[in-house]
Image (cartoon, rainbow, N blue to C red):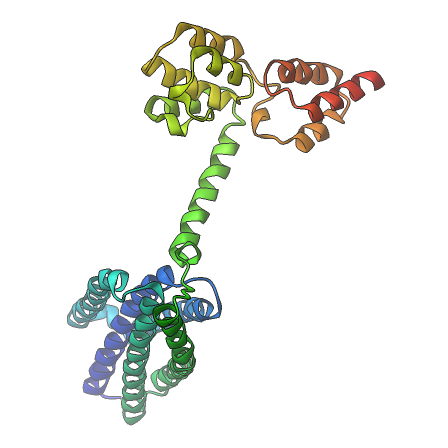
Length: 330
């Protein structure tokens, strides 16, 4: 392979690489707007394929000495940036286009068909050029990716009629099927929220963290954030009647909120009397069955501590019955 042939192959590889990076961004945006189901599964599968394509192209460029040619490195970087910039400028349009969710998904699918057609042309040209230059490795790579792109285009074309039918039902019959709560973005938000909750739960197993967390949250909370509904409309006596049901985190939230707002001494005094060390760090996060499992270990001192704490705070019948049973067997 001559120097001129190698330079041309590197150019085409860089163009393909920039295209793959742009497609990654486009697929991510479309997955975020697509509800769960077979079609989104196809998009997610192709997103993984596209990332692998980019990695394989990078590896081939490295094998051809791409890193040793400043001009080609610069060209590749510019092409990659351009591809990503095009995807970034397109994403806001994806979010607002169409009159409904069904229309957005259909328009995105049509855009994906166009993107796949361009990818197919790109790899067809790369494979042909590599064959002409006698670069069998690049030809094999291009043909491998080409098959993936052709397969994805076939899948997309099969989805178009179904997605069009969904638009028709929504527009003509008022039978919308698009549910924003099932989109990729919603799933990611729930996943992030779940991780945050699990992290907080683990952190509360450290002594003192529960009260500190509640104090911080209460200082910036609104009444609707508190565990007692309609808090601001309740009298001091009504608030006090509900305090014993709260966890240490929620007690600290109420305490901080109350001191920042109405600052009723009867409420804050009652909170102070209820704030105490849990039987063990993280206790308030446990359900009845989880507490029972610990009590069954037969530690009499722990059982008495739990009983005292429950009577003063949550007063859960299932836990109290378990403490009675354990103490009677002691």
